[in-house]
Image 1 (tube, one colour):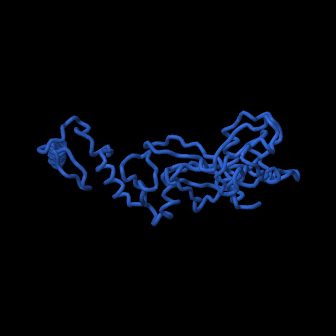
Image 2 (tube, one colour):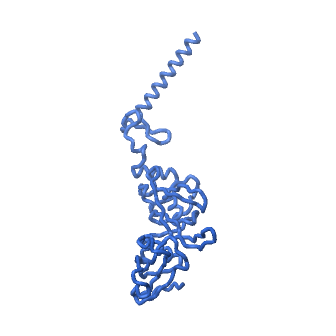
Image 3 (cartoon, rainbow, N blue to C red):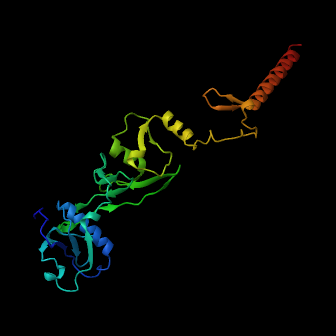
Amino acid sequence: MSDEKDVDGERLVIRYNTKADMNRSEVAEQAVRAALKLYGIECRKPVIVLGAKPERILASDVHEVFSDGNADTKIAPGTVTAGASWELENDPGVEWRQHPEFHQYEVSDDGRVRVKARLVTPPGGKKQYWRPAREIRLHGRPGGYLGTTITPAPGAPPFQRRVHVLVCETFHGPKPARGMHVRHLNGNPLDNRAENLAWGTPSENSHDTVRHGRNKEANKTHCKYGHEFTPENTCKGPRGTRGCLECTRRRSREGARRKREALRRGNGAAA
């Protein structure tokens, strides 16, 4: 199949087996884009889709059709069901890269994940077919993050992976050291653009939450006993955290009282 796609009026046609799914134009369009990419075609002409079963594209079902600009000149009238343009395959300016560990997945620099188009071999000696690329669903995770389900290999059990980790691994390389975190530079846990993510230490990640006003401890105005964190009532704890001076004094008084009582009990027993 030629990669030269500059002939005026050229059309790429994909034929499907039946007409049952002819109205599924959005799925058919996705299948067309996947087929174009698989065959290395840089086609910027309109695409015509025929028939059904868009999720089962056979290599033998892809044909080049040349016409004088009218799509119906070499196609029976009434069989054209949808049109698409190759420019719509990816959003303008969005970059997709293969994940360095899970090679069957691609990750975009704006925080999306998809399964790559692949050749499927059915059991029983049936004919192989291409399964088009499919963007996978993202869901909420604890802490306000987004996650998704990853299947590392055919037949392997699926597991959950946070999207910001997948994006950072794909565009910024593997985790530099054990214990490193992915930082959201603007403080928004839903913004998984590659430019908003970076590897960092737990300390850097914690400082980010303070800087962005998302740190639970830093946002507290009172201690758990209801004492306000005023400048006069705030002390520095052993780990650099804030402490309540009133509670510290109370604990000191209670400790001194327990010591006095213990001394009295000891003196009474000795007498």
